Image (cartoon, rainbow, N blue to C red; front, side, top):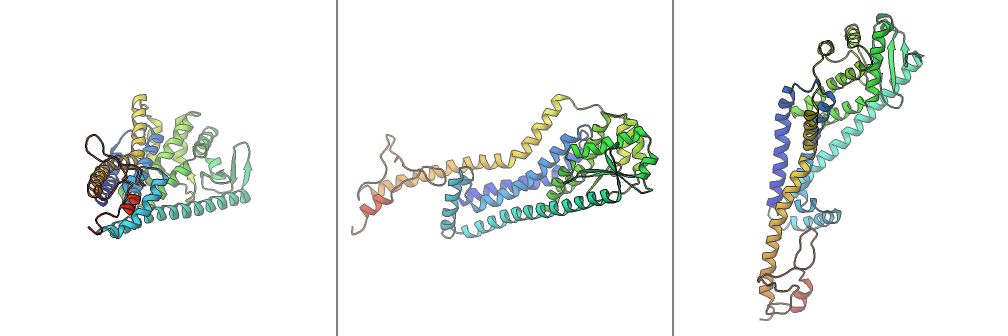
Length: 374
């Protein structure tokens, strides 16, 4: 069973390595991402976190028999107990289990620590920045924003406990009313779409596995794609040319690290996209991309499940052979737990913690005490 677990883990690691290395190139060459930015974000995040899940499941498979992962919680707990007992009786078992526990624990601990630290730090920064802006600025109910006195034109939003759109007086002076409405619509789209959370998920994934190109590209591409998605949302309520002109005026403005600014990312590309929008993706292609994202998210689990089924069948055959051998050896000593099937094989009673039927002969063996005194 150790061989089966190693094979399952190897498949998961190979999947993670291939997707982590090749996936960035394939997605980087795709031309449809600018035409469907939200779908592209979903695909990038599904691919990145699929890699993390595959690595974690590979370690868990080595630590616990693969068949237990395909069963219920009771099977998993029982397998853990048997794994600890059998690890020291199987050549190399303790080493394999130790490597698996180390890998799975490292992935889980790094993910939890990175997510907790990042969310806590960015949440504090966003809250502090929003509170400071409200203190030094003046609320502008007509604009739905906080107006801060500063000569440099800037517009950005800060999410968190107190979502806030912040404008400088320089932006109000530089933009005409139509351009200002377009910029505000862009910033409100960030808050309504929870774009800060999407960026956070991508950045956490990159910090968990920073050496994989896919994770690094996912962080950069998600930050770019949320801007495109906010542009699309803003152009539904205003003229794209007004937003493009506003981007030109705001392109040089700086924004805090925890904020999303209207003119912060790929302004030239966004301006060309606003002035010459591409044809939206068709319905069939969108459905295909949704299916692709779902497949990426489920591939590690489905691969583990399929390998579990194969390993379970092999284990069942081994158990049947062992039961037949045990039945032949104990036949002269007394009754055993099982009956002879028409085909000649011994039927088995009981269900093991690994989810397969096994021979239950402990009581009979104790009563018969075979071969002693023969």
